[in-house]
Structures are given as C-alpha cells and as structure tokens.
Image 1 (cartoon, rainbow, N blue to C red):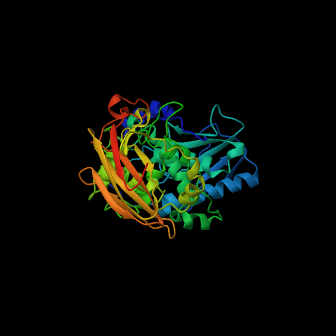
Image 2: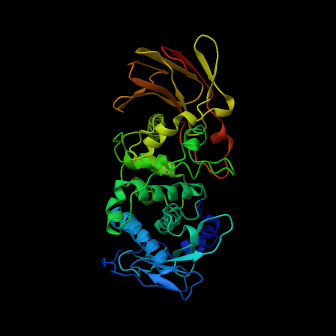
Image 3: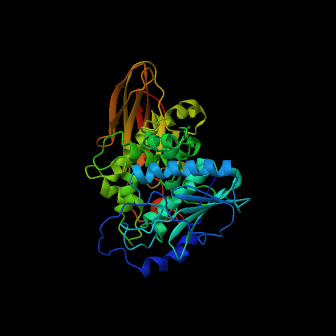
Length: 430
C-alpha cells in the first residue's frame, strides 16, 4: 500500500511556512492557464517524460504515461475544478492564489521504493509536491491517486508541520483514492478523461473488526489510520443531513483548521457541524456502520458479502441477560462496539447501558427485505423498539467524551483507555 513520508515534509517545511506569511493583500484573480509550466528541477528530473496540462510523468512508456496522466487529470478535474481544493499547481508558499505561478506536478516512475509503492515529496525552493511511484503501480489509482491526495493535502497547507494531523494524512489520502474511484462526486472528472468507476477497497475486517480502536490510530503494526477513511466518507455523504456537513466537509476542514494550533481534525469537524455535537456525529457514524449504511455507493454490498467473517466478539455473557464488555475490546476514544442481536420473529427489544464513562449508544435496525434502516438513540441509558420478523438489529456503543488533543502516533492513556460498561437486554440476545 502506498504511504507518505510525512517526516520529510515536516523537516523542511517548518522554515518554509515561516519564510512568508499567508496573510498578504488579495490581488485581482487571474484565470489559470490551460497548461501549467513544467519544471525539471523539481525532483531528480530526466530526459524521458510525457506532459499533460497539469502533470508531467518521467520514466514511463508512452501508453503507461498517458494512462497515468489521464487518471491524474481526472483526479484534478474532480478535486480541484469541481470540489474546489487549492490547486496543486500553486506553490506552498505563494503569497497569492490569484496570479500563480502555476506549475505541473512531477511524477516519477521508479523501479522500487523501500517499503512502499509510492511516496510524496515536496520541493523547498518551489513549494511543489512531487511523487515517486513504483512503475508496476503507476496506473493504479489506489497508489497514484493516494499519493496525489497527499499532494493536495500538502498544497492545502494548514496540516503541514502539525503532529496531531500526522496519521490523518493517510486516512485522507485513502479517502481521496476511494472518492476518486467510487463516488458520484468524481463522475464528471472520470467521464472527461475516460476513467471507469471501480469498487471500493474498504477493509471491513479492520474498520468493524477493530472498531473499538481510537477512531484514527497510528500505532505501529496495529493502527487503523489507512483503513479509517469511511468516517470521512460518512461526513462527505452526510446521510443524516447534519447541518454544516456534506460534499465539501473534508476540504473545509482544512480551510477551517486553526492555523498553527496543532489541533486534531476532529476539532475542525466539530466547528463545521453547527447543529450537532461531534460526539453525536461520531455516534451516528458508528451506528450506521452496523450495516455500513453511510451513503457509500458500494461499501454496503461488500459488507453484506463479508459480514459473517467479521469479528463481533465484544461482550462476555453474565447472568440474567446481562453482558459485560471484554476488557481488550472496550471502545477507546471515539471508537465503538457493534453488537449484532439475535431474536426470534417480531419482538420488543429493550436495552440498557450502565457505565461510568461517556458514551453515545444507538439501537440500529435494518429491514432485510427493502434495506431501509432506522436508528433509535439511547436516552438516559436505555432504548426500546419493536423489531419485526423482517428486521435485524444491533446495539452500537461509542466512546464519545469531550474532545481531546491527541497524537495518533503516540497514544496516551486519556485516549487509549477503553469504556467499561454492561449491557442488559430483553427481547433479544447478544
């Protein structure tokens, strides 16, 4: 899987940020040129290259280069032209976005990279992102668009040199790649450059099987920061119609990020959600993940195929229909337990949560005949509803305390301590 060497960027972009402030007077806007200027000094350069309007590919054959360029132009059309992200042709430190200069992104086809299929770098002098991609992955959007997503993150500027966003760079890059491949938001861009809509590569074994983890966890060998992107898709698709969220949420979270604050992206999402707390938003995301009903075009169909293999072993049974969460699977900061229920025929299901912590709990119900879902929020620790013979249900318990400023690459006890609770059920078993 492609990854981004963030330390390279942070190491030399700290001085880049300090060199010229962003708050310069606004100039009259000049339309970007139809084709940006190439610069062979960005990256190692080379004599074999192919150009498109916004990109240059080095070291690839004509057909591979052209396929790569069409893919990248499609991504540019979607994210920059249609969704309004800051152009990757504008340097990191430009004092105005209105008059350029506009420079092509250089992409280098390489034989191998240590431990990666692709890497994003940035150039000190120009403030431009440039990419290296192993040649066998050059036309694979899950790699090249992922790396270009790092480039767009870099050119958005506000996350650079902010350690608490570090692991989220991978989460966002995966969101870019999946949105490019699957979403109707990129349909226009795909159509313009002859690109196909493809299936999602959602990793449900991680997202659901380890849903108890911190919502974005950068722990070595066990973290979820590559797999956690469905949360960003949920914010983008906004199936609950939360005010302030929607198709521009991820872009706006960069624009609304408090510059230099080293805050977490959750803090920016909280400001964007103007009518609902981020705790309610996170709780409803996990409630919908019970049946992967997050507005994604193909993720639910993948879930319905794989659900029997997913790990839901969150509870230990006690006496009298009482269950206790397993210590190792207690939901951590903004993580959750998804607990499928078993019932017979139509039943009135009542659930009660007892905990000393702060949680957002939901009774998620899906009609197996027509696929419709409904969500019953717990009030004062309990929820109850009649579930018909054609419906299935799950209890979802999310750990939703007050926001914490945390570094996903260095989890501390305040985020990595789980929520201890007991669940009492009637009308169904867990």
